[in-house]
Image (cartoon, one colour):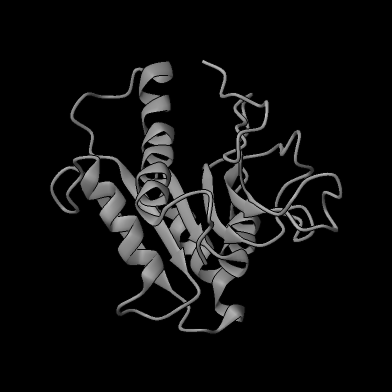
Length: 184
């Protein structure tokens, strides 16, 4: 599920950095208590056990200096391949009030979107975020969701298929080099 334009190690660091930037934003704007350990909710369609998605996520966090249980807390929920469980698990995670929800794949992302409109959601591995109903459109995703999606010919006829980062709150960057830089 890789992209020729973005090596795996860069995706790991990028996703970890994206999640951590979302965790840091409230601290800067709301003056959160110093020393508070960030809390991530991780909603996964698969089962507990080895997975590429989970391993890449953890590796990205480690590369950025975060160690689970020491300076970051991750709450996991696994649907064990049962899509009907995702909305319930997403609601359970939302009740814990994590700083951000991470959702690899479309089914988990849809469950998280149903569960909260206020907690930031970072998705990855979504084939068509517009077609799935996760974001309004590529130019202005809207809401509390951001992440990586691949553009299909159906959703964007004028561009080749590639990985794109869609962000809300005036942040949008095309990882293939288009003219949508992150605002600072």
